[in-house]
Length: 366
Ligand SMILES: NC(=O)c1ccc[n+]([C@@H]2O[C@H](COP(=O)([O-])OP(=O)(O)OC[C@H]3O[C@@H](n4cnc5c(N)ncnc54)[C@H](OP(=O)(O)O)[C@@H]3O)[C@@H](O)[C@H]2O)c1
Image (cartoon, rainbow, N blue to C red; front, side, top):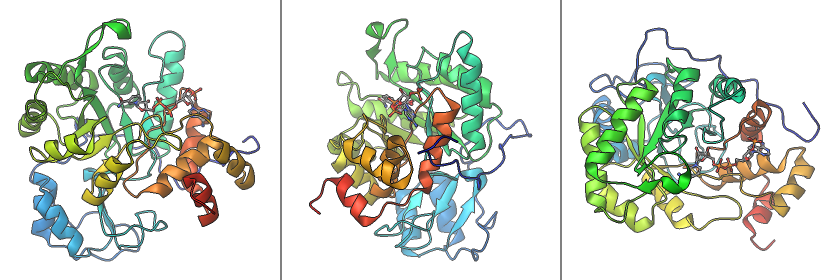
């Protein structure tokens, strides 16, 4: 380990490799019981079994909210990638204040992995496979890819590295942009028939029967939002996706989409120096929607550089620690092509900011 870099945590699990040949990572309809795999030290959940079953199998928002009100105890369902938070004052790491109970629909750690940076060809492909496998080994709860990244090549890389997928990593992809070759040849395409076609391609490339989290990469302004979200919702109904996520949406678009279907996540650009989507983050936090900031590292920030020197970490780690500290809804997806950076990013979860450091990073008056 080089100086100034927080070591990777040792509490992580061993690589989860599914031995059953199971091909999906999402919840299975009708399979919800509440008594499986409680977290060590936790008591039996007090939430009603029925409500939890409804919430999980139907992703029913009313049931999720009712569960919150019942102040259920912390328990964990690895095969459903579901964590119920125990108290209004701590997140599932038991360390960060949250203003109410909420449900985080991912398991394990709080730092995900964005696969976009990975080389899919040449000699670097081998390194990319190693990075992905190490990410899962370190307990990264979510791996983000998209059809756009290499026209499916990135999805194939993820499958090559990780299939058969472990039960506690969500492999998510994004559709809604089509094309081939250089980026200039790509365009938004949110037509329902196109979304359906893209999803069939993603299912094939990811080698799954159901996509754990299917995200709309961009809202296509040429197509009614209701048609785009409606198409994704139908794909959930058809069993081809377990949950729906959105990317680069406004508060208004999120509300419009939520009137049509349950939305599990929002992926918007957000980092220390770019907080344009703060209002969207706050809606996600209030509504129990996971917020996946892309470009989470941003550019090295002056205050982050100073605090990194103080705490013996790197600016990238401080940028990630700030995100986690910022909201319990936060699930950053930093991307890297190097194992060393990956380990560094995951270790950022260990950093506890002081209130003074938080104020400086928040750029609030001291
Ligand atoms: N929804 C969208 O529209 C959208 C758009 C863009 C990206 N994304 C997703 O978001 C993910 C992350 O976004 P991003 O890749 O644009 O931004 P990012 O994760 O903030 O930054 C990635 C860059 O930071 C470097 N890096 C990573 N870890 C580092 C560390 N510890 N120290 C120093 N440098 C480090 C990487 O280089 P090295 O490879 O050298 O480490 C890479 O150049 C993508 O992988 C993708 O999955 C989504």
